[in-house]
Amino acid sequence: MMPMTVRPFDFDRDMVMLKEWADAVSAHCPPREILPQVGCVVETHPKHGGKSEPVATGFLYLSVDCPVGVIEWVFFSPQATPRKKREAAIHVISCLTECSIDEHRPVVFASSNSSGLTRLYEDIGYLKANENMSHLIFAKGE
Image 1 (cartoon, helix red, strand yellow):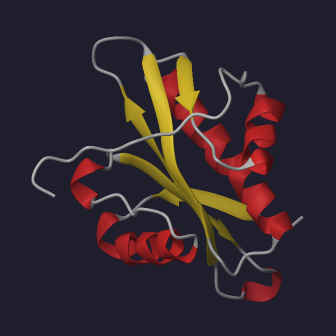
Image 2 (cartoon, rainbow, N blue to C red):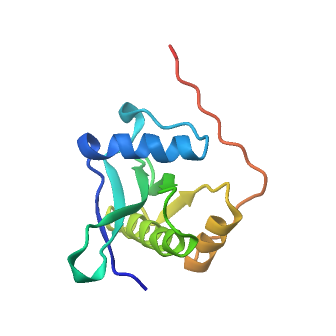
Image 3 (tube, rainbow, N blue to C red):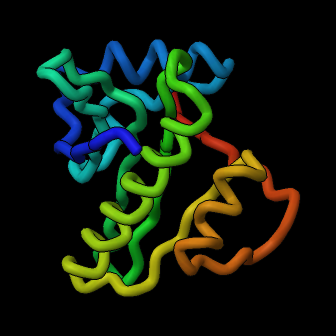
């Protein structure tokens, strides 16, 4: 297992990367103005002092009127191996879940269009709420 670290998402540095990763899977890249302030990037740290490599990112919306957090916009580096993606996904989900709990939002919702990612959520303790859901976005003026 390669050592991985989690760092905050840096909007000035990481938006280009997020767009590239979304484009690689033909997904809609969320505009900066709708992303929450709580986001993270998981990076690998190769042995022998090599350069760190971003592998995954995700974001956490924190509700202001009820004790709920929502994990969204989980993306992966298209160059990462399936094993690295799996390890990084566990870090992203765990980090954002812990953050939600630390912010007094003990209920966390998440969505996934990948059976592998859904299984990882379930392995961590999430329950599948329903099947075949589509998430739609409306943005006035776009």
